[in-house]
Image (cartoon, rainbow, N blue to C red; front, side, top):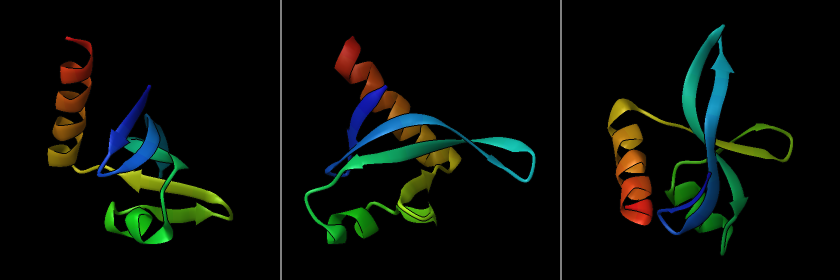
Length: 70
């Protein structure tokens, strides 16, 4: 699902880290690289920007989705 998180357009999903699925956001578009870094995205592989979510951030994302669709 596509959402805007801290001014950055991204897609929700999961990333496998050490055999475990972790909630994550995948960068689709950003107004500038500064926003990308401020939102906490890291380049996991060349050209692939990912934000691994903590429990608190995951709840924030769920709230954003709920507000968008409810």
